Length: 409
Ligand code: AMP
Image 1 (cartoon, protein in one colour):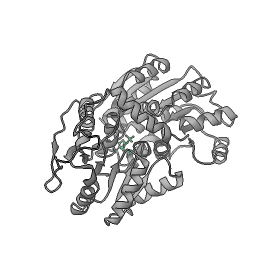
Image 2 (cartoon, rainbow, N blue to C red):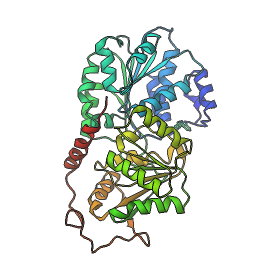
Image 3 (cartoon, protein in one colour):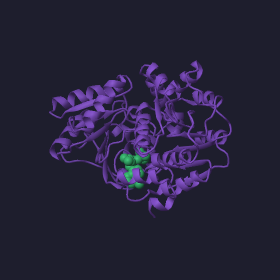
Image 4 (cartoon, protein in one colour):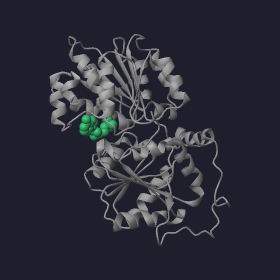
């Protein structure tokens, strides 16, 4: 099925064609007609599936079908600035042959230019919840005429503790609207949120819930924690990998690893919530341009990073929240491209792999790389080689405790 059969405005089809998209992705095929028919939608789709176009194109189509006004008609809420930037860029691409204006609103940068941009006229606002609320409270933005509300990566928004902000925002927008909720994973908290937000939604799922992209090869190497850095540099160097995104759990860990890898001769930068927006943008741009070979990122900082043709993701540490694994490896194998997701698991992380396997409903068989076999005589940090898996709730709490320190408006 082609885009032309989706009944979208010709100026949008022209932009799609210029973007080089040949046919709609499964989420686009399922979501676009439902949104065009004015249904609320709850869609399970991870980053990399083409979900941004799935909600953006029908909203643009609707806006184009009505007389132009100066009011904000659509709001896209995202958990992070990076994802907000990514969505904004996509909207600009798809709306390039129209007069529709999108404005980006996120924290960590001066509020004034955002207010000026809003005042100059905005049809669509793409925002993170905290800064959006600042604008709504100080009166620099009103959403009285809002018709479309999108939650992008809703699971992550809840994980990051934005529930209060969301409820506060909901009080300030019209109850009569079309609401679209996209989430990579579903659990009880998402269903609870959906009940308060959505009106008889169409449930759209492409592939199975909570599954990783199928075109990503997943490999797990068991290796001692103190040899992970050496192995990482060895693999990147010996296999001549050019663009490698590395996930790590802490900001300090990210900085330290980037520094050590540079000493190994691999140009590496880190990206995390303690870095200024400017520094994060610069690191990301240099990584995309190929000036740096590896980028070490924490989970929160990596949200929304969209790098076309990214082939390699390394999980330097397994995530405490198993669903993060899906988000991480969703950075590669995007929109039909193949990718490799390599996890380096120290023996005391086995319980985290089990949690990942449970979420994926797949076994991931760990291997040993000759020369990097774990030293089985070495006591693990906690005095035991393995730990029994804590409940999902405990692991989530642990991760969220760390995140609350990282959270930035
Ligand atoms: P998303 O899941 O929205 O983050 O999109 C992931 C990537 O897929 C982005 O680089 C999009 O430009 C690209 N993309 C979206 N839709 C299509 C399509 N129908 N064909 C090819 N690439 C697409």
